[in-house]
Image (cartoon, rainbow, N blue to C red; front, side, top):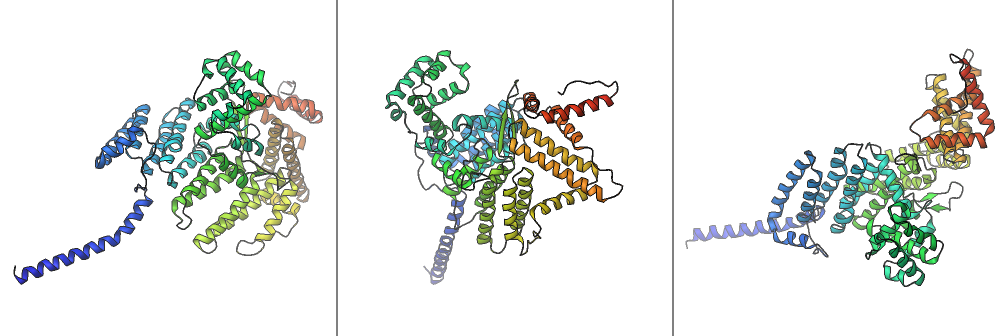
Length: 590
């Protein structure tokens, strides 16, 4: 070989070595990117179904091509309304790509959002089934296969927070009711810390329960009473038992007679706790100790006693959103590398807490015909947990992002200001004073400072005057009084008497402030008599078909029996209105 050829070969080899060395230096970044995208399998799939194990090995490099074809076919089936076929293809796709978290995320979104809304709102049961399918594919299959993917925890939390907890879906009240009823069967009403302690201590296997002779006798009697209850699988037995407690008519009369016979016995109590804990653990995939941790961290705090912390309201979807988001942060979070997915998951916790503060009190009221009505009301007991979340979020964002998170601090001040008025309006004046004191401590100086030097009562009344001055006039003031009284009637109808009394006092205070302003301004006519506004608020409530008829009847009967003075005022106003109407028609209060 000539020297010239040798030099060319040598330069080529040297160049190849340089390129190889350079490429090896890039492998670290490529490997890190693959880890972040969930494309690295660090451990083999364990306990996988035979179909999944075969597909992940046999198809090799062709899996990606097959998945692309199936994906396009599934989208076409969805557009054609062939939902069951689309679901089958979704199963195949996730079998072929079990470690790619985005596939599970897409399919869950497709079921809970795209397919569900393609079903008419009148068929709410079918919609609810598809929402549940979206939840289950993440909870039961996606997360167990990808336990370190924070994306899947966030997506599951988002379905609870947005699809079920928000109002965007026409059937959101049905979703809320079904979830609330499921949780009520498992956790009781009201939920207590003692209930969670018993559930956490419940045995995880049926054999331990049956070791108690009384429990074994009860279970044997239950199985003998109805073939539907003769289940060998513990989870299925627990489901049937809870179904019997909720809907006895679906079973033989002898089955519920067994419950009546053993009611109050240790045997029934032991099996009842086991059944509820089993469904929570195996069907809902909840770790009960972690639920208790969420209760201790974010639970409702008594307005009168800050040391009395009760559980979260698990009947509300946002409590479940908090659970899955926090579980994702615990299992898949990386405090040293604060990713966008982790930040978005953290935000779900924070926004769910705010939602529980605004709408966390779930009221289920029977309608007499069809499904019960669900109403969501502010839960002021969530204030302390929400307030702490604000503080922690400010500290966290200052630590990770550096400097002062202006929007967060400004939002916290607005939250506290609104809370002062919410508690004052509901009649909790001492709590309002404590929140006002916090405003003085934290926002009297600095960039977000504001004047909080005036006494609490003057501060609240100044806000009333500001709202009235910025409004059009007497009509708006009348509306404020009327809406407060209508809210008072609603709370009185559902037997939240303290809150009702607070709103009634608030309406009277608004009325007095405006009337005083009218006296100081010559020529102002002023508001109608308070008794007249009160009657109009009552009439509007009684004529609002949004509220169940039983709820409206309950209000009338309570006023007649417990508030005869108020009933007399309403009847007098009704009579005056009837006399002024054409023909002078009169009648009793509806």
